[in-house]
Length: 277
Image 1 (cartoon, helix red, strand yellow):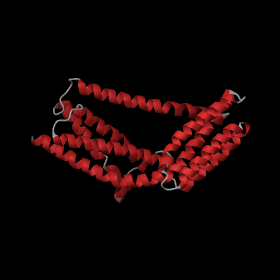
Image 2 (cartoon, helix red, strand yellow):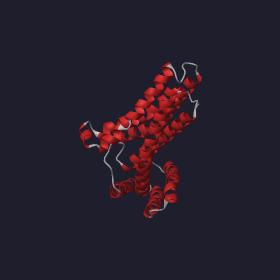
Image 3 (cartoon, one colour):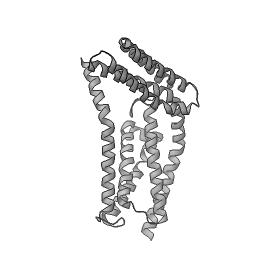
Image 4 (cartoon, one colour):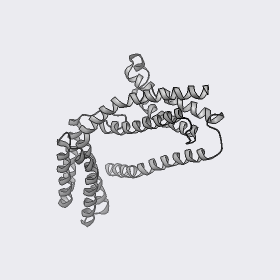
């Protein structure tokens, strides 16, 4: 009973997560857009100036996280997961304040260069966060290996197969998707097949839903089985895409730090130009 209740709560949280994310991002974007159009302040004076300085300082503090990972004396200050949380929060708050400071209006050349460097670095951070989550147990968990992910996917597949013994039609759909995901994950360059797996998963889950609706099972049982199919599909996709995610994350590490350095240089040039001219 407790397990069924926990699964029900997990399903509700999963369904509510993305709408809440979209709502929060939409609300934040609407606030920035409204404040950029309202005649509340000037970018170079008073509140506008303070927003720009605050955003710049927050993005400068972002550099403490990579230093915390690499500089030995700093490793004694707090757990790395808390530094990572602060890094992500500042990575959103800093650019948001700079957007408010600029009022979405770019004047001089150095302002344009600094702004677009910030956009590139922020977008790079979003990509890095996505890849990080693909390689770890959540955002703060231990880094996994390909063997770990494949073992978990296989164990989940076997458990779901036992659950689907009463509906062999649904079991056959999931078995077919499992074969597709294994084939996509075998070759190191099956990028197209790996990218297409989420679409294939949606089609398979839709077919599972249709066949479960046609089965003579209670609605709660149908929902529980479909949720299990969804977890199996997610695990299979992650296992198939894991090696590619590792390569992309390694490449991201090579590119992200130089981008941050370029942002720092352009921001310094922008600040000097503003105060000199």
